[in-house]
Length: 151
Image 1 (cartoon, rainbow, N blue to C red):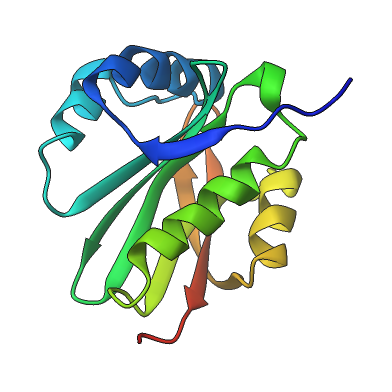
Image 2: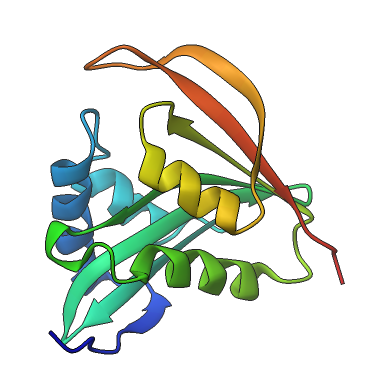
């Protein structure tokens, strides 16, 4: 199956329902549609979406302050996985934030080997463990960090 190109851009109101649906399908304790809608006006947040043929294929949301950014959630719809969309979203996020932050942080379930491998391939390293950070089921979260040069 040939790979189709996606467009990565800032989330707009028309994308919120699709973003929330992907979040709902991917996480046991998902953000609500209202939470994503509130991110549209949050000056210390950034949500990027990857669009394929007008449909949201994936997204990344971060909060940033004081030269650090926390990756709150990143997800790719089931039909679009293993096509590099997550990686391109994270790289686009870093490009968007270039010169504004010097460190990125995230938590990931310790059992989520594909996500951990992706983060490590992009230069994230484990810096801690948050016991029972995740629920449904209870699981430790690995705290990962990536430092970048602030231009």
